[in-house]
Length: 395
Image 1: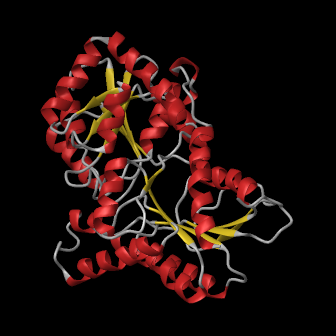
Image 2: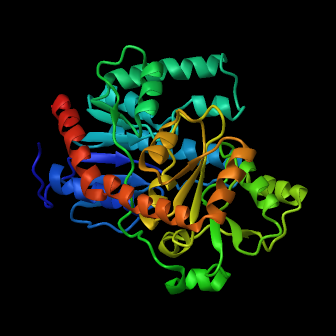
């Protein structure tokens, strides 16, 4: 293992276009173990510059499919060019953000003889297929999968977020030299339970005396909020519950239209804009029930990071997912919420908790207890273990 000295040149580089403050903080902690790092990103956050130097590249723009593609491609090209010109032979940790970034890193690493690891946040091109952008047997998809197999085989480590996701990565990677590692995301230490009576965000929006069922995050093509919307329609006459959608994305207008079709009144279903990172500790902690949704067919392609934020603030999790997903396994194992794929089962499960508040309180307490399994210290040690092996293989 390398020992850190903040005066040394960066020994490793992390490439990730869109990241949270918690991710940046984890890189800083790891730099104190492995040595100074550079973080190449489009979303800079405050870090100790003695340990992590941030290089700001093109930011991700999610406003349309064309801006997504353009900013993804620009960031990947920038990162690839920088890797070709980087001095020395630093180790590289590349995240699937943008989706084809690992392929770009693999290409540069072969030329420059660099060691690297891949963090698979979302499994591509499977997501592209499930979104209907391309067919499963298209030349592009088959070529991307084959290329991924080479990327995975040459990596010092390939890391995913859950065991079922790891199995999907290994199936795509074919004859990988070593098993896919599993490192869950971690609960942001800035997030913690906060009673609504002490929460100014709850007072501002009238949430203090109501049970809040909240979806917070990007509204993209891979999300499936139909069960939540139908449950809101069933609860239209109730005054004790409010459904809240916080965020933006390509799917926002479709969610609004569907809510109108179902006749859900604004009193019961509220739409709020995407919140700044600094506001999340207040907005997320308003949720008695946090909705985490995965579209059919995407259950093994990712584990939504909002899961761990919900645990940290003590929200019970309403998981719209398949019964055999990593998300479902987490919720059922910790007894911190419920799993429902259909609108009928989602509504039934939610109504049971609205009518029996004590059961909801138990699940919220279980969420706080579960968050300790995904605390920064625990996940940091797992990262140290995996990166130590991966960096050792590159020397």
